[in-house]
Length: 163
Length: 83
Image (tube, rainbow over all chains, first blue to last red; front, side, top):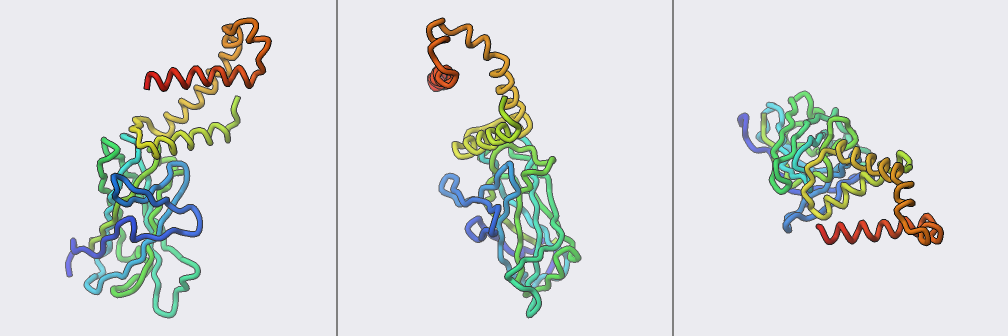
């Protein structure tokens, strides 16, 4: 397959929480979202199977999010992958590869979605191969100096494609 | 004056309440925090002026907490009326 091909899509209800510092499920105009606090580093996990058609081109993940309140400022998002290799990785202790981040500017109105991307090279996806299971950790790094956006960030969905 | 932790707690609470209420907030985190710090500093600096503004009977008869409650009641009512 080729660059630009969709790999997976997830909405807020497709995630599950870490044991601590979890993003909070919420709704906005009845649509499910995950709220990520401005003063903490909160996270959510997404399980995925890398599609068989993945051709080692790297993965670009698009975050579709809105600010609960802010109309300016920057939200720092982080993504990290943990491969779950056959008879190797223990699901009782997640081991994520190096997190990649993006400093995403809030949309000009708090109800508008912002689309921001994080691209992983094939060498940055924890060795994940086509057909294997993995966990994707989504975090807002609210305590980072670059994160200046007041109030919650609401994650609506993720869409991933081959880079 | 409030402690650093108390000011940080108020800052987080202000953001949480704005988020829950879906209030549009055209400030960055640092700007909101500066507003909280400035408000606390203003209360500290204005304490004497507030005392002097109270009628003598209230100034002498109310505890500090009761005076603060009076101020809060008036401020809240004015905010509700103007909001």
